[in-house]
Amino acid sequence: MQLRQLFDKDSNTYSYLLWDEVTREAVMIDPVLEQSERDIRLITELGLNLRYALETHIHADHITGGGLLRERFSCLVGVHENAAAGCADIALKEGDQLRFGESSLTVLHTPGHTNTDISYLAKECLFTGDTLLVRGSGRTDFQSGDAGQAYDSITQKLFVLPDDFIVYPAHDYNGQTATTIGEEKKYNPRLGNKQSRAGYIKIMNSLVLEKPGKIDVAVPGNQRCGISAMEGLINQAGEPEA
Image (tube, one colour):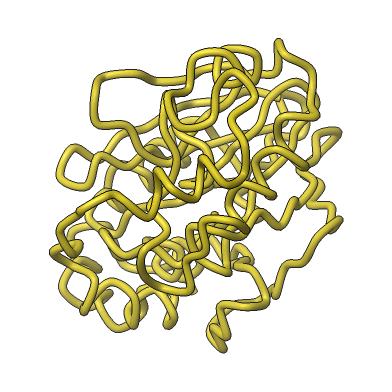
């Protein structure tokens, strides 16, 4: 499996383009609408057949480019079944496998930041969305968030993986690009050194955070796969193929 990590500086979002080197079948995780021109160009230049545009959750800080990628490449859009996103082609759930060539991703439902959160497990790495960040974790104070549920997701589904597993998050605000399960078990200030469930809940409930600036537009936009925001960017990204 080949991997390209892409960044949107306005929302501090990482998108991931994965592909099988032999078959050229590909997956995009957490595409950002404003970066659709970049993503379409790269997929085309690399000669890839985009099979899936996948979300780790219903984001509150940006609108997805998944709907636009589907228009351009006829790929399938996937979100967790709790998202109630009628626009999606696949309502994902725990244990689902998404194959692209000889590579695959396994769906882990990891709620807590929201109830739609998914982590995608590959052979030797993990795409954690906002569930687990580099030295942090997703906030739990809005959008069906639950600190106890987040703790259970991280400790029971992610921290049981090998310590050398590479973790690729959906966001970073300090210039980090990746981490490992072992690092986060040891150094994560919210979760490290066998933090208790009660301790984690206390930390998360004590956070005082501003409301995401785009939440009122992003959440409904993402429940429609970004389609409602497509028209303004479609000319930039190129007309969809018939």
